[in-house]
Length: 419
Ligand SMILES: CC(=O)N[C@H]1[C@@H](OP(=O)(O)OP(=O)(O)OC[C@H]2O[C@@H](n3ccc(=O)[nH]c3=O)[C@H](O)[C@@H]2O)O[C@H](CO)[C@@H](O)[C@@H]1O
Ligand SMILES: C=C(OP(=O)(O)O)C(=O)O
Image (cartoon, rainbow, N blue to C red):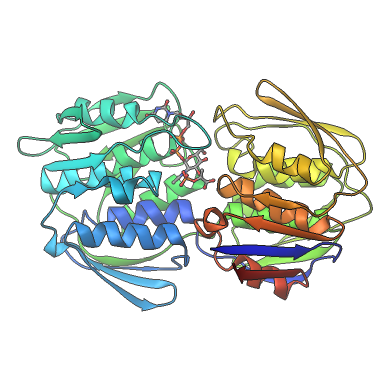
């Protein structure tokens, strides 16, 4: 078992290179099931979830090769299995993203139901309903989604009841090889959806409207191989910017996508930071004590739920009271009891966390409960007096490449230790 030990009090300063986006890399790697030839994907982050995805693709018969640290090739020609087993799916909900590509390419899929997880129930009914509308016969039995189609999937008009990121991606991936036109209305507009669409277009797919709430896909008979580089991770970028501000520091994020973070930048500025941007970098400079901010999470382009925990940590040390309302997931405040152990004063009222900022947090033993909760504990540890020992850090390794090394290079006192 590993822990992170953080000694707070150092201002972060310098440059950090942002990795490829987890939430774009995972669907792009799954989409590599679709073409008829080899794809090479660059800027793939070194994350636990990426390893799980590659294991899943291998389980389905695909050949994968790690060409360098962040470059992977996938040969889908040896696809010979259609089962995504529970052992893999239970460690990573995004495994459900094999459902659409498998059905479109192989005509059948058996994918374990992801089940509930720490942040909420996270059902996949919209994925299933959409694929049924495209002609799939789907039953859910013994914890598995069993799906099959006679011949090719066909195009359909799909209106999503609620905005779903992986739901949109799963249906878009299925539709690229379906017969005829599919429209997805009330589609997710997240930048990662655009990245997946751009990858598919590189292989020959016909997709219009990704990044808007209506995506139109004209199915093609086959897709070719090709090469693509995953977009930078906007949530990792936002996390480093919050860490910089919390510590009163100055950080520039390189290899970033400065235009994917508007809602986060707005709140950082309200909290007192100066933010500057170039083509592929974004920098933050702090000025005095953090000001409290009010945040409501909502689908893109509004404030992302994946940055909520980090801003809860930021508000904990602000000069006044700020509140955070979570509207996407029903149980995404598991970091609050841990932050309280470090001296944060946070009340929970329904889906709102009211944070009364304190002058200092104090180091404590805390545990990660989910990916972004972990990031909030690291941020709190960086500003706390004394040592914070963070347990269950496998959560953080799901979504942050070498977080302690990147923070060390910015001057943080943080170590990974085996216990
Ligand atoms: C791998 C990946 O990209 N993960 C992201 C993705 O998760 P994910 O795609 O799982 O999240 P969704 O966008 O689907 O969830 C949004 C809301 O829709 C609900 N819902 C979703 C699908 C469905 O079939 N039925 C249904 O009711 C969910 O319970 C949730 O309340 O988007 C989330 C919201 O931005 C992010 O926090 C995750 O980091
Ligand atoms: C919730 C997240 O990821 P996932 O959907 O993979 O659980 C996240 O990235 O914060």
